[in-house]
Length: 512
Image 1 (spheres, rainbow, N blue to C red):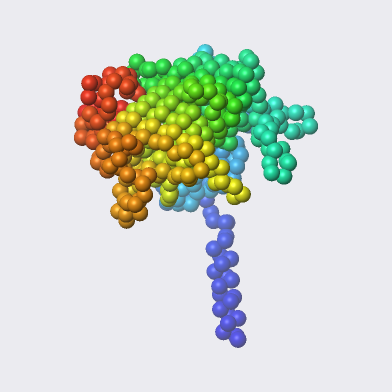
Image 2: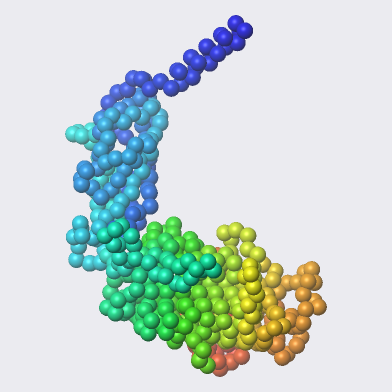
């Protein structure tokens, strides 16, 4: 027992000694070293906080030192914020660094255009972190660009509540509402003068049309999106760019985080939602990226013409589905969809579809994927009921591919029509286990439903991980297409007399 007591005292002394902070220090002599002499914070929108950036401060000497002061040059008026060695603030005193050791300084900012001055849309905002004063003072510069924008958001009422959009009733009779607002008539024409930043769901009112001009940039905050109401329309009027590398005339929909680390992160915002009863949607030369669902179409307008015509458009990095349609009526041309957490194209509960020279791929690498690149069904199963509706789907001169063995699933119930035709497509369908051999839906030798297709040959994409879905000289899609259907590819390159399947005509890839 006496032995155990002595051992406990010994360890208590060790533990107490390890927590001591009263080591001797000498004042900093202006010989600190830094991981960088300037911290560049990536461009942010006015009023939206930046990511957190770090600066490492080194004490290379053999002595423990104390820095008398660390502060922002503009003091408490600075729009930057610091965290020094775990302590938040804008000014700090007597910060110790052990010999041959270092500390972290974390930097972030939220700046408003109204507090800054500039003649353009981008405002350069600068400050500095000052270490010590007088002759020993050292500085690390801080630089960021603040982007001006048109901000659209729900009204906040005097009682603290926020404007909402109510979409109907649930099974128990409760209203289903989301954070959102109706666009005013003055807000129904998006120009390319400034970017648009949307908080919540912006709704196109009944009977109205939202027109989005060529070159416009539309950014959505987390959980935000666009809703088109009954008898309302969306017209995205992008144009072919003069330089395919610049895409200056495209309309781009993406999140509101401008930092490079967010450029390809899925699920940053909600969706473009074409609700049941909405009509006459036209999307041309657009990029829709990093959404939860790129486009969701709830139904068709009942007419014989397509409810959605989508051309020369790319949908990338959708957390769930790139294009999700329930009983839709869609014509797609030069459409590219890639990298989706579930399916890139999901056509459920029937509908009428015509896709020509499209590329539907899925090389999702952010987790396990159990659904194919393209899923086509004439039913929709809910926990309580199975709904069915007639389906008509035609795919001509397309590529359907991905990094799974089976990238096309046809899901049919006999209670509704299931009419489909695949002609001159490149399709990945490796049925190694023979699960589909006896299924008549996949009778690839039947020219009435499968005609002139090529299976499981290399599409030769430029770089699917970077959504560069151009095809090269060795692509199996080369000269596979039926000629004369679409005169140009998605980039405006002319289709030849022996055109290639997919959205792109093949090119010679640049040497690495």
